[in-house]
Amino acid sequence: MEFFGFDIALAVLAFVVVLVLFAGIKQVAQGYNYTVERFGRYTRTLKPGLNIIIPFIDRIGAKMNMMEQVLDVPTQEVITKDNATISVDGVTFYQVLEASRAAYEVRGLENAILNLTMTNIRTVMGSMDLDELLSKRDEINERLLRVVDEAVSPWGIKITRIEIKDINPPTDLVEAMGRQMKAERDKRANILDAEGFRAAEILKAEGQKQSQILEAEGEKEAAFREAEARERLAEAEAKATTVVSNAIEGGSSQAINYFVAQKYVEALGQIASANNQKVILMPLEATSILGSLGGIGEIAKEAFGGSSNKSSSKKSTPSVPSSDT
Image 1: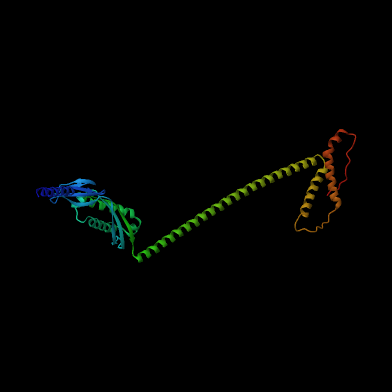
Image 2: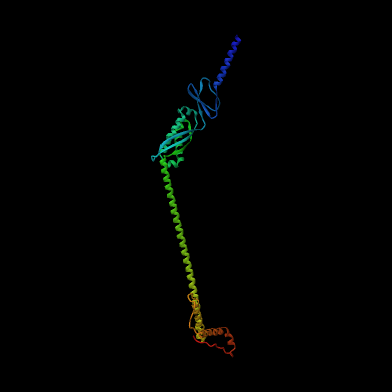
């Protein structure tokens, strides 16, 4: 009997030792921190892994998730600076940096963060016009993040991001904004059309100006060349007249006959080449034309046979009978 009682006592002692060991050894999962309380007072924080506490004296207080967490912000109505009522919702990302402060500085951590976020959404967005709310979401997110993060910093919390998901104006306001946008686009389209028409007219005027300048320069060049041609023609006429005058002064009557015959033939050519003349009836004497042509032949003989006549003085120059016109 004594041996049996000793075995029972040994077994009970072993059981107590095992129970004490299980009560004193705590395993903390990765991503969590546990707070340790001794007689209800915080003493230390257990990190991930195996940790030892004093059994029956120390106990686990709060199990804090140290990973980044997301908190949905429910839809709420906000009145903007220009008295427009809109519906807004969002999302908040936060992370616990100090488990002890998050556990003992605030009660209901998620509810506290949510209320702070919603309050500051109304504050920040209520100080802006509707157009600013719709076009400056990044600025709204940055202001919310800065304000809320500063408010929760005493709790050992870090707000990593706050994002506004949806901004929903009333239906009638959306329709008015659509009409306003259409009017602005029509205005810009009309302005662009007017600017394009103006640019086209300017280019057209510039083209006409350049065309007129080039045309004037061409007319100027043509007039200059025409004047130069008339000047040369006048010089030739003057030279021809001088030659004829010199010939007349030298006693040659054939030269004047040649000059008159040339003008006579030119006048006949102009009459014959007229577009409105089909039949020409003129009382002209053939002998006068032949006499003139005889004068032309005499001058040609003098021009081309003058040197041979001078070398042989014995021969006399035959004369072609001519009649004066």
